[in-house]
Amino acid sequence: MALTERYTAFSVASALATRATSDPSRVYLRTRSGKHTYAEIDSQSDALAASLAGLGVEAGDRVAILLPACSEFVVALFAAAKLGAAIVPLNPRLSATEVQYSLRHSEAVCAVTVERAYGIDFLQLFEELIVRLPDLQYLITVGEEDLWYDDRIYQFEDLISAGGGRDYPSADVDPENDPFAIVYTSGTTGKPKGVELTHANLLSVSAGTADAIGLGAEDCSVGVGALFTAFGLGPGLLATALAGASIVLDDDPDAGAVLDNVQRHRATVHHGVPTHFVSALMAQEADPRDLSSLRIAVAAGAPVSDELVRQVHRNLVPTMLVAYSLTEASSTVCMARPGDPEEKRIHTVGRPLSGTDLRILEPDGGDLPVESLGEIAVRGPGVMRGYHRQPRDTAAAFDKDGFLLTGDLGMIDEDGYVHLVGRTKEVIIRAGFNVYPREVESRLEAHPAVQEAAVVGVPDTLLGEATCACIVPEEGAIVTSQELQDWCRSTLAETKVPDLVRFLDAFPRTGTGKIRRVELSRVVQSETRSA
Image (cartoon, rainbow, N blue to C red; front, side):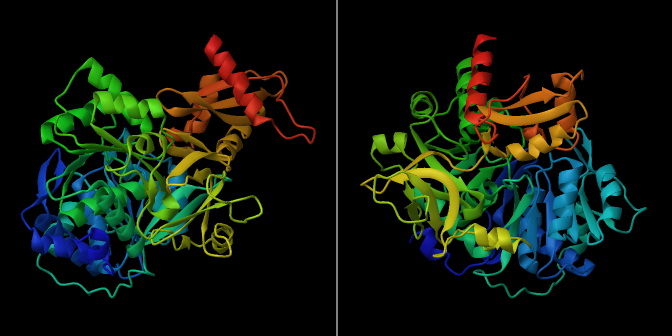
């Protein structure tokens, strides 16, 4: 039976309970600290749920998780699910300003965080934040610090110990309507949007993705490091659980480290954004590993070149599948399958997942025929409930028939395969992460030496697209590229800090005064090639 049929009407908590009952001793997570079975994760999440309930966390509350890829992230996820609470997974590399915005906007009552990582003291960060966030009542920390001096801060291990064997209220979850995750993604104006994904949203896409790649109990996946994304939650963690497979969690983004995990754990499935596979090819050439266990690679998150697919086939894994994913659709919208003709696997992003409908729209919203280029619109079980606390943005994201307007350009061929061509929205996809120019430009223009800023994407072999900040400085001002990058770094996530900075006397403009961004990008590319 297909997983999409087996897990209909399940909640996230009941999906884990089913797996922990049927395969209690099977390994779910493989981490640097050891192996964790389904029964162990189920038991630990029960204990944490009991302790959280004792603190007053209940159905409908939001629990933020700021953790690297580790077993504690997974335990916290399922503990929240068992209480009927929604998780707010946040990138722990976000700036303090971005973390504060997301916690305040989501009204999170509790946050689970690591004490120290990436050179950041999260205890100090939250000491400063907690007084500004009236809804945030408790902080749970993963680490070794003795925090007896603050009655709102608890250690993760202490709560696991205290909650063992205790009961907690059973949540009555409506999988189709109750949100399980609020995943923040930048909006076109730079203001983060909280994408509300229900239990059914994530489980349907997780099951559909697992079915598409034939994920089974003997599989082991690598390359899923960003658990705070829709992909990390769905096709990463939940798809693994639905299939009874195992997954390697390692926060090291180095491609060589991921290949080491393939060899060490005899992994069979390799996930990643296209830029990761570019790095993996170089790492394998420099230091060959035994990758004979790999059967499939899945690339998503950014455009994938035909040549990259061919190189991966030749040097890393026999079959590479390209997927088209959106946070607002719980990640995977469509993807290639192992049995597809080779030319379709190389040149397209496959076919929609089961139950997902795609339309190609012309500018006025009308349907276009097969082989026509237009905006991709999506309707299906994975499409979000809406943007958290943003009804106007939610309404604008859908057409009158309930199709999500993606802002991506594509076409559907006569065989039903989707060709992803480009984007209608102004967004740069850098190493699999969306960078919206207006957000970065606003920060740059706040610098006293900057008169005007325009951020454009330029092709980059490793990143896919690099961000270049084009600057018209104030007359007589003296400012360096490094100063402006540091200025951005103080409030923006590292992925949004410009990779390049170019100074110009003026920008090319249209007759109505708008910046010609395509021309500006060409100028930057020309300068970069000649440098």
